Image 1 (tube, rainbow, N blue to C red):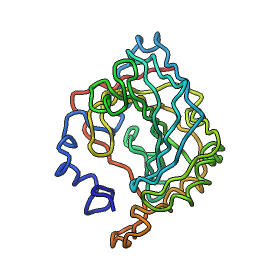
Image 2: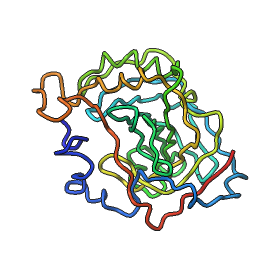
Image 3: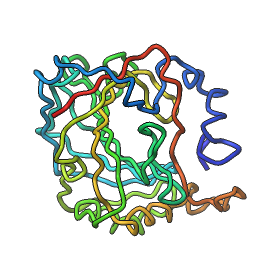
Length: 266
């Protein structure tokens, strides 16, 4: 069982006891109030550019969800709000107990069934993800909402592997190319703001780029996420409200505070 998680006894409301940054002024996720966003013409003149690697090494059950580690050669993210080049290191998803909730960011108070995060680190200024992770400009995360609709073929390649990583600590080789651009909407309009990792230690080092348009995935694909367990195969099943399954793994929105959320139309 994770020291932190999403159950009543170890969920987001308890994280600040072990991770003080969880109470910081630059925490994520947030509710994106579209009427309060600042339109930024400078961003329009600096188009977001990215090349995402299709090679992945492993998919892992972290005890808090699934995570895909990528082979980053050729990966680059630049432009938009970024002054440097960033490189993809991993991607993972957050979801809810049903399709009425699950996304971490919300838009005008409305949530989506799931949200995927493509985690990048500043490879211009730092030598590794670990070095970049706690720096103010160290990380950039692309956030994309999933909505229920047609099956997503690339996501399906990962869903096929989930029965091999049912328990915390389980991992398996991905074994085929997976194109993360299939998780990004055709309309590249986005919101951006300074924030944090949404899981402990909640480091305040993330430039968030949240795409406005959701991407379709099937209800069955999201349901497959909830079959994962939050404990190891040799551990006793926890006596929690989810019977040891990762039924939900999203952090609720935090206060925006003095931060400005900028809007960029593609």
